[in-house]
Length: 111
Ligand SMILES: [Zn+2]
Image (tube, rainbow, N blue to C red):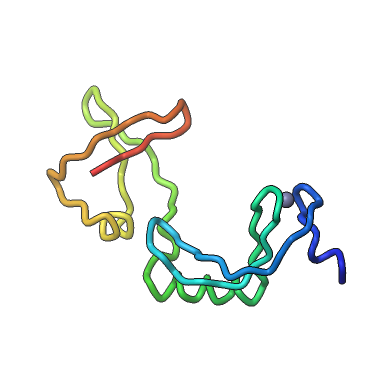
């Protein structure tokens, strides 16, 4: 279908390219995708998406994004980190981090 080469976002032409895919700063590989010449929106094919999912799982990066709840310790609040995140970031008790609010919905924790 001709429609498949039209950007879903802006309606401009899309070209086939091999695109680098990375997740959490780790390069997963190059995959075939349609890239919009105008807005650079990238759409991976269903086949490429399946391959990406498989490789993300193989690299142990699947399911790193998780929900957690804010707890209370005395007068301060703490955030419990799931085991997978701790392992990925190599956090230990006592690891010094910097916390920076990016806005009122986002907090960045930097080692
Ligand atoms: Zn576009």
